[in-house]
Each structure stands twice: as C-alpha cells, then as structure tokens.
Length: 178
Image (cartoon, rainbow, N blue to C red):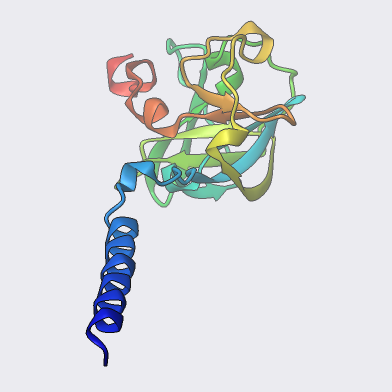
C-alpha cells in the first residue's frame, strides 16, 4: 500500500475509534432518566378511589366480623381475625379526616413489611394497575380537604395514590401507642 494512502487509512481508523470511544464514554447522567413504574392495588371508599403499591399489601380478604374496641381512636373500627392473629382494622376515611358515607367495609387490605401490621378497610377492591411517576401529580387538597401527608400523588382520573411507607411508619397508626 502506498505510504500516503496507508497514512490516510490509519487516520480514518483512528478517527472512527476516537468517535466510538467518545460515544461509549458519555456520562450516564446525560442519559434520559427512566421513570419509575408503580404497581398499584386500587380500591374504593365511597365516591373516592385510592391506590397503594402492591409491595406494602400482604393480603386482601373479606373479614367475617370486625369487633369494636372501646376507648380507641375513631379511625380504629375494630379488630378482626387473620389466621388466628388479631388484626386492627383502620377506616382510612376517618383517618384522612373525611366523613364516611356509611357503607360497610367489605374488604381488608393487610399492610406490613415482614409481618401483618394493620388492615385498611375498603368498600370495593378494583384492580392492580401500573402508573409512571410522571402520571402522578402533587395534591394540594386531599379528599374532602383531608391531610395530604400520606398521599403520594393523584392521577388525572382522580385516583389518590397513598404512600405505603409513610402509612406503615405513621405513629398515629401504632395501636400499641393508642
């Protein structure tokens, strides 16, 4: 090969290799962020729809009976039996500061990490769905002007997404401390 041709070929190869190295070495931070996808269990309380990440819900069941407990917080509707264990049943409507519509809770969503902590009462269970981060909008006023500290966001179709981690760690829901 002629020396000039060889030199141009080598320069071309070097330029191609440098461009590849530049593309491969680009910062990960410059890549677009992938949005988190939430797997949510949806349920209904009165006219409002709620959802919570499925990873915080250990079980969903229909209670045979919820026994009232005297001298407890108004949102504690009572206790029920879960496989021989006593499980507190919380009324999310009362806890969030909204008036209930008087319908009887048909379902209990059992919350917990490694063991059942408490149950949230629900009138209906709807479905498991997926939503992206960008589909959740900040909540200025929660359902019926309730506190929004336990609500992660709301979707365009008025689905209130609860923050399961905050629910599990909220001292107001610790029965031993009531």
